[in-house]
Length: 497
Image (tube, rainbow, N blue to C red; front, side):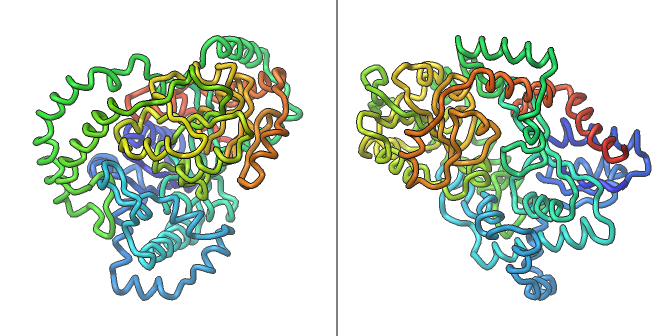
């Protein structure tokens, strides 16, 4: 049996390696290849876990091969048209390049990323060709993998691999949030429609356990939004005591800058572009003050008072750049313009209310919010206002998002939802997936009514097909990997059944 997996950052230590060790224990003759992200992770695997793998590639650094003259000659023989045709994609720009934030943005500038592309168009296309060759000739080669395990779909490589595997009928499995708090679901689709789960939804009969859970979960949700564990900020010290945190981090800053300088001297870092792992050391210094300046400036920004507004539609800002927008909705990543168009598409008497994402507080400048506030029919409210108080407000007529948890929460709270990327909860009559903004007003007026029975069935389906584990929290701290490992091992067992 041949298996390919990506060992990605901390996920490799917490879940990837335990999975591979389990595979080797139960299938000792299996051949496992891997591509590793982050130098520290790569060094650890090469030094301590090399015997588990047949071949090991270092992600990001591998893309430096486009600078090799001999490889460049080979790349020149490949046409982009061939890649689009083979992978069955519409455009390498939309489906591959735009997904990879290291190429289309510049990490380190303007705190997290600037909107200026980091590599030339020519180099971006060469990186596509290089990764296409890696997948086609090295990873698949003479014998294709029987199954592929990924932590997510965040780079050109991930997406080339997924599309090529799909064409070759090889399943790529990855964990993703089920939207039910503290439960993870496995998917083999690159978007969030979870077709592997909901394709038989109309004929679904829930287990007693799942149905009971779903009813209780729904009833609790009506009283207060049940946030995913990793998004519950009520007791998160990160959002408290900003002044104390500032002085502590100020003391640590010289050490962080020096450490980054040392890390950047590592020859295993990519040179054709930078990632968040090897931003310039001086940017660590300037970004610290930039973020804190933004935080201080926001104390003088006058937010609109939600209680003083009439009927409204709600649009939550997104973390950017992130594959939840770049991959799921590449034509809707300009949030400023999207907000403007939504606001002018709302019927008279309904205002668009915008709120910042907690992860982005301090990342965007005060000027950004001032520009938003200056748009016709747009109001910006304090990010400390809870989602529960917004969506459960009787004056909330609509929730509209690019992607994310808020749409799911709103759907459960009986609100009308318009989303600009595919999602499994489109099966609910009060949810509409929209890709044509010219039809926004029409679809808003024609959205269906809430269906409690169908909603509870959807929750039952999610419970039946998921396992207990906090998806994003798993990237931040050690959690028992057994549920994840067991779920992935079942996919291998299904191959042999």
